[in-house]
Length: 273
Image (tube, rainbow, N blue to C red; front, side, top):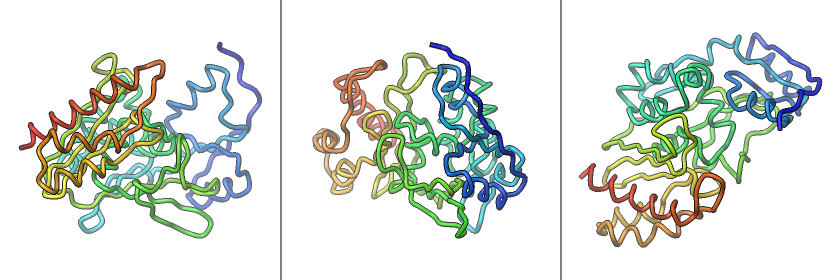
């Protein structure tokens, strides 16, 4: 049911330090940029917060650069920015593919990497990619910066280790060695929330991740270990059940997700041979 939004306070910061001060003074503040999730919540009568912090003036957080051999993606980089970036296309093509399948063009122009990470939905399309490449989430708070591996970032459904006074400022990805592979399964080819989303890197120690099959995005550690030992696809897939915990919901069923997950792992292994 659509309802009118209640009164709220909008803050706008023009420096990172000012943004952190707002969060420290008002811990209930919700940082916003593209607002592709927040606007939906407000439209349907939900109230994510009473204070909002507009981050769009922080242009430095939209940059995509390198630091040594590390790819640094600013938190305000949009899905369109990812698709256009020569650095991302060269180093992380499966992230480009994930960005291409997020919503429509309008959403791709507005939605941000930082927002996808912060929203913490297990169906976030970029999250399996970031998990499969062992990305690091950069957080900035009153005490300075800290870095958290994305595989340790989420603590539960839509929950993370980020403190209320911290901002996500970037995602960092080291060199990725191996063939990259991404697939999204939804009701439609695009403009649909994922029923299952997979990303993998074929290497001597393969890295595989799935979304929409557990409360958070998950690395398939048991399946990875089986492949690394030289197991066949069928043998490795026996480990998959221990890596995922899908549920029935409005988009799909647990059985369907288990079947599709196994099919995606098999397809990944065959196509990257």
